[in-house]
Length: 336
Image 1 (cartoon, rainbow, N blue to C red):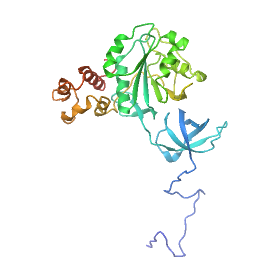
Image 2 (image 1 turned 135 degrees about the vertical axis):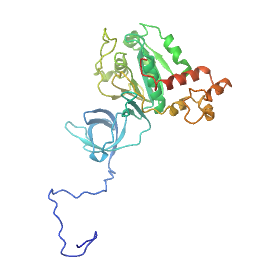
Image 3 (image 1 turned 120 degrees about the vertical axis):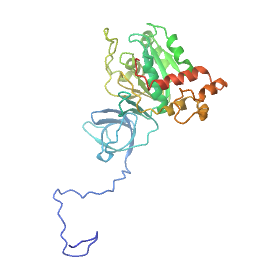
Image 4 (image 1 turned 90 degrees about the horizontal axis):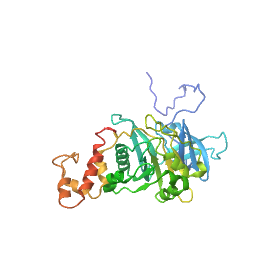
């Protein structure tokens, strides 16, 4: 049997024709040096809306990206028709390295991570004080996800005209989480917009919360020219809101630099993906005390060195209680 190398010089070798008429496959991928940068605004059924300079461009993911996802907040490289004209389509050929990634799982037992947004600086956790009733376990879970992703949390409490905020704020005061309290009147007269906007300037802020808490209503006041997102009402029987936002959407703030990302209302926030050892990094007053902890310490056991660290006066006991409460949310289902 005759064998030939890669560069045979025999003149009797037959080259198999390419019946499809296309170019032969190659492992060399184009560098796309002419690609321009875009910012992903929303993703809808495979069509990705990006901001390129001062115009929006509709693009699709290039095949060479494989299973790599593209999410709102991503910085991407785009080629093709970048005019933004109707019925034009560009291609996303590269997703740049993400500075932060906010993830969640459907449940604590679900190993499949869902990326909510990329490159956010802050997570605004929107909770109503009534109608629907606040769910502290949901807030705890969002805080854990924010700390795990390296985002700064912001607590936004709405409908203060229906119930006082003191009890809920007291539970989170040891964490030092910044907060804003608004009422329905504040939303109507614009006061809520001013209260919230000062926390959003020069930041990319993702808004999360249950349906019916007023999240999208608040976003509509922050970005009035994009007031096309519908809002819903709370079901009088279940006490839950109805989903009115079906996909994440990034919108530029009005009046100050910054972006808000409105996300669909969630009814659960799974934490299967969270490594408990990363949550302690959000507690710089407690983190040095873990040096004496046994390997794999859950920070809620007899051998945990944090008890002695607090007893020696290095941190407030309330901070340790808050840390342990947050870490316990991964082991305890919301509503328990």
